[in-house]
Structure formats: structure tokens, C-alpha cells
Image (tube, rainbow, N blue to C red; front, side, top):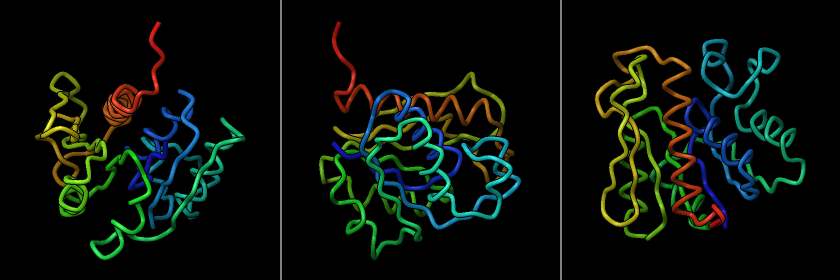
Length: 181
């Protein structure tokens, strides 16, 4: 089973590390961005990686955890013209975009595909009391507070990591990765 992660920032990098630490071994991750000093408070990168490609450094960091990881990285911007082509071979999709229009693009492009889609909405601010998981249709799960976006509020590691952890748990549970005891 292949998991596609669309975006390698706060949500994407932390969902990836949670999945790899849980034994997931086949990932495809796409992002076009470079690591900035401001990313280090909530993303799975290090100071000596500033200025480098997020997907290249995330691959390097994840392979330090699991050297046998099957990971495909794509250093490109995901657009309406390439999203389906890039991620059609994935069984599960993790939406980790910053911008609402790209979140909408992913849902519109893949909602009828029956792929499990796990998304985030409202990850900014420090309030963690109102984090919810909502299910839409048969295959879409969205995690967050659904109110506090990055356009209006700062992002802090605790809330981003909690949302990313819940998202990774949904992937693990709904993707059938957990073993029944």
C-alpha cells in the first residue's frame, strides 16, 4: 500500500515521521518549497537544512529512522494539471497544503476515487481543546478546529503535532495497518 503526502511542511513532515515510526514503508511525498528558519518550530527539519529542498531533506531524515523505506519524492508544485497524474498510484492521500484552494483541489480531484483522504483544517493558534475529526462521505476525514487558520494566527508545534498525529492514526487505522490483538 502506498501513501501519498501532498505537502512536506508542518502537517506533511510530521504525519510522515509518525507513519514511518509506526512501520509504514511506502511513501510518495511532493512539495516544491525550501526549508526556512521559520519552519523549524513545527516541521521535521534541522537548522543545517535551511535553504534546502523540503522533500529531499525529509527523505534523508526519514531514512535515518528506516533505512529500507521505499520513498518517492517529487520536488514540484502540485497543481490541478498534475495532481491526478502524480498521486493516482497511491492508495491513501494525506492533504498537507497551506492554502485552502489546494485543499479544495485535492478533494475535488480525488473524492470519487474511493481513496482514503485525510486532511487538516484549523491548525493554527495554541488552543488544542477544540480539535475534532469529521468524516465526509465514505472516505474523507478532516482533523483540526475548523476555525483558526494560518492566515490569521501563528502556528505552534504542540497543536500542529497533535493534528498530524491524529491524521497519522487515521491513516494507520483506516488503512488497515494496525494489528488486531
